[in-house]
Structures are given as structure tokens and as C-alpha cells.
Image 1 (tube, helix red, strand yellow):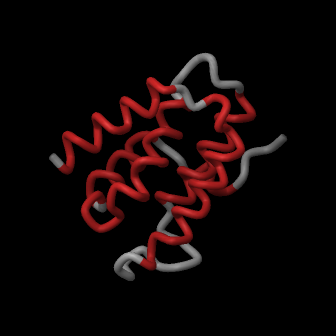
Image 2 (image 1 turned 90 degrees about the vertical axis):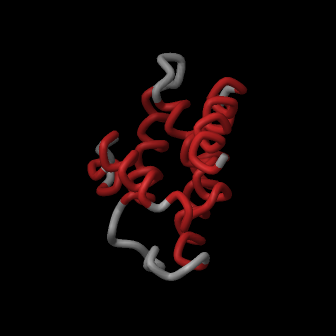
Length: 112
């Protein structure tokens, strides 16, 4: 299966830049699933098809081209959240407790 446009746009640097720069605007509701997905994709136990799904959804999250512009407060991230939730549902079996714990720890560092 070939990569989709958003999967090709994913890079670790762009992911971390977006999550850090827009953490307060996007909020924990959007960032928690993004971080869980990210950490699951870093796990060697996660199969390649699931990693492609994750990177595609994270690529959409960090993409400046969006169905609803991210500059719109709250509503601007609703499409991102929808994509992240769909990806989470698709790869849920590969999201381990440790991925969720690491995501929560990262959010705790950012939000206190």
C-alpha cells in the first residue's frame, strides 16, 4: 500500500513543533490521543500497517492544510480530533497502557 499525502508530511520535528506551539490552543483533549498514537508508533511491537495509519493521522494533525483552519479557536481542532479518534479506534489494540501513561506524563509537563 502506498503512503498517503498526510503520512508523507509527517516528521518527528514537525509533530513536536506543532504540539508544543499549539498545546494551549488545541488542549489536552486533542493532544492526548495524538501523543498516545505517537508513542504507539514508536513501539517496535506496532505493525507497519498500524504505524502508517498513525503517521497518516498525525500528518493530518500537523498539516497546515485542513478541513477546518486550526486558527479558529476550539472548533478549528474538531476535524483533527475526529481523525485522531478514528486512527485510535483503528489501532486501539496496539496502544498500550505505557503509551497512555507516557502521553499523560508529557501533558502533565506541559500543562502542570
